[in-house]
Image (cartoon, rainbow, N blue to C red; front, top):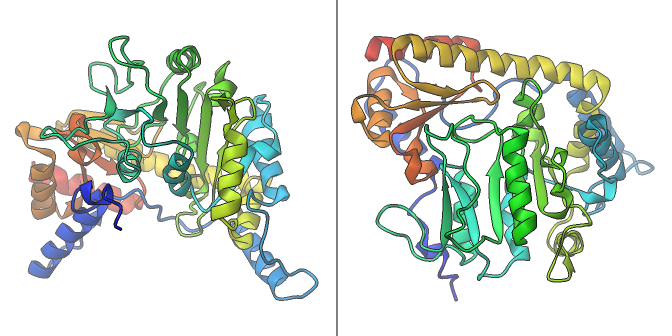
Length: 404
């Protein structure tokens, strides 16, 4: 029998619908090339240390004495130790290598973590937010029914609005405490970044109520200043949080595929260790990330790799500032673009986000992402990404200024 919850999903994934509309436009129009600032895919080449490590790893696979077949489902020790040293010990955080689970990307883990929880689990999700959080819970039968306003009946929505700086408040005392709370900082799509105090509010709430925070830190490499890069910088997080990180934006591995999830051993619910449950899940359903990808990931976390990555991140940060400042000078109300590669803008003239998408495509041949695709509170907003070239970012601003 077909899983009935899949049939509750909207007809197409957000980015598939964007691709469909762009293809339809291209079939009917010729002229200026389209500038794509919609999907958060990187464009800069991999840094040299990653390429060199991949070549060495490929050579390993060409010789019987260094050949690697199946690796540990949890990830090779060399990478888990490098992750702990670079991402956690360097910040004074006590994470053990065996609390790190390497995967083929944070998106997979964010979706698969739901395997640990039954269909009665109550979920709270920021609004707007990355659509995979919602869609994966729909697939698992936790979302309820899709309501006319775009919300799901069994999901608790945490509004992220201009009024609260796009940082959600902890769930109200007037609603039952959720079992799972999805947080993403720096935030996709708004670009907002939570302070230590704001994250501490969620950690305290989770520990008081037995909730689990699912913390997506995929964009932590874009943070400037004294802001938390990990939920585990917040006291008490080891007993209430799971963290997802990715090499996709840190190192440009969107095509290479490598990420990791951290589950502390202290995280216990209903007498069960979430660490042990995830380990059991991975050993059953996952055969480990590519050896070549893991060697490349290890390399970028070293001293030389970190230095090279800083140049790539700086390039995208400059793009973000260019787009943010250019749109502001054109008269748009703009947010984000400071600690994240995303720029979040208000649509002009009270246009809906899809109306603005079509107008921007037709008038400027620039593609972005409609805010309503990230949740009901995204309506009236629009996301642009900083992952293109400097030249495309500059040209996009010129085109938008000429069109509006």
